[in-house]
Length: 233
Image 1 (tube, one colour):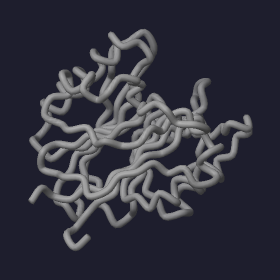
Image 2: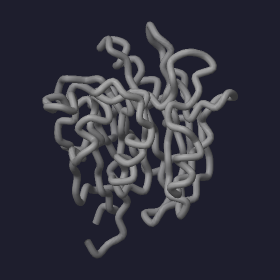
Image 3: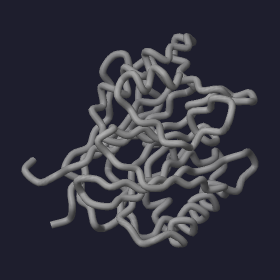
């Protein structure tokens, strides 16, 4: 690949509790590091009960060379409503925002703007609801929030909780193209493309994949997915 490229990954950590029912943040971080990504969008990064301390400890993450974007609430949370982003320290994050999402249970999205080898980039991390009606409302809320911001190339990534093909979301996520990533759920035998990455027309996909190497097969109920993006020729 001669032209500059950027790897975006997304991973639902399931609070660092694996299929063996053991909470192993070191194992989760091993999987994250193996992705060789520039930006990693994470879901379920914090424990469930208030003050929702981080399931993935800050010191472990920073020790391995990651910059934790400042979405967390006081009390040690890594993210907001369980959503977080990690970036390589070579990337410059300009601005971060929270996006409140409608639904039966508390949900939110996180948004960050970066300066990268591909130029300015806005990344939005989501973990949508289990009920389809609310998923669609949540996607509309995300796209409204994006529309209120300065125009900038966009990547959406996260656990969309949508079993249907990407076309089911395209109507409420206008202007982005969903990457044809492999199935990632359940980790032990993936059949569902719940985890997705989408991008605005400025980009094209050079490569994509799902990371199923050990210990990813047991570290969470989801496998992480990734996409290598380049600028549209």
